[in-house]
Amino acid sequence: MTADKTIVIALGGNAILQPGQKGTAEEQLGNVESTADQIAELISRGYRVVVTHGNGPQVGAILIQQEAGHEQVPPMPLDVCGAQSQGQIGYMLQQSLGKMLAQRSIERPVVTVVTQMVVSPRDPAFENPTKPVGPFYTEDYARQRMQSANETWIEDAGRGWRKVVPSPDPIRIVERDAIISLVRSGAIVIANGGGGIPVIERNGYYEGVEAVIDKDLGSECLGRDVNADILMILTDVGQVALNYRRPDQRDLATVTLAEITQYQQEGHFKAGSMGPKVEACRRFVDRAGEAAVIASLEHAVDAVEGRSGTRITR
View 1 (cartoon, rainbow, N blue to C red):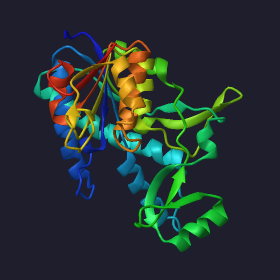
View 2 (cartoon, rainbow, N blue to C red):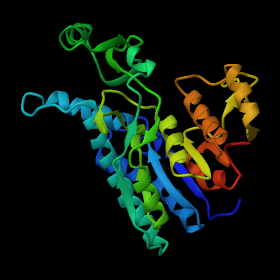
View 3 (tube, helix red, strand yellow):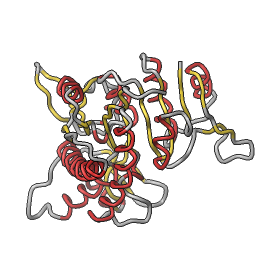
View 4 (tube, rainbow, N blue to C red):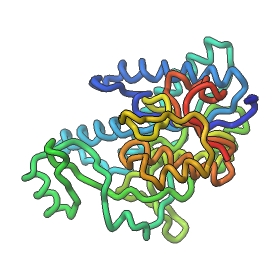
């Protein structure tokens, strides 16, 4: 595969926070530096890169901080917390990418765009909140919140109670034209973190809503909006697999759009893990993308150039 292509690189949570870590700034910066090295190598080979990322642990930490400090300062709503996380992670990526580019003697601006994602107020997800956010609490606290604030809470596998919010389908990015302009100017753009800040449009204006957009589906929307050639989702497994963790597991290297659609219909990809990633890739290729790739973070360069990961093509 030749360079001179635009790639949207979607970073999974392991790119920023590893299992077992506390989440200190030093830990997260160290993880991001390793990720940035892979991205900088792709840039050095001539690829135009747009970066997006998850934000679940970071938003969770911000929500805990909001709760802990609510008697001293007013807590912020979920959409504002999402914006805070975009700035936090974007700053870390800007620092790390700037460092890795400088080590390669590449002079390119790196910029983060706080990104809003339009959703429909009539999306069925608003009638059926399913996405857990924030920390675990006791049943008494959860029931108090359900009664006093009209929130939806669920008991989560014996670990406690968590608030759940809607997860509507992403429609379009408000800042699309600005992102495209930055990419064309040569900037390395970090955008749409956490799937984007969900907003609805009313009378020509946008207002935030309490919801969470699936980061993989948000990545597909970003790829489509910036006319990317390739969508690459980096995660903690090397390839997509059929019959995952069973004796007859079969890893997938290159699959067609028709084949991956059939595997989806057969129920191979779980909603809580590989399902959204595969669906995002299917949508991207179906909507005129050249290829979509799911691969491990450590092999990003090899995956783009067809030597690693799972590649979905037309």
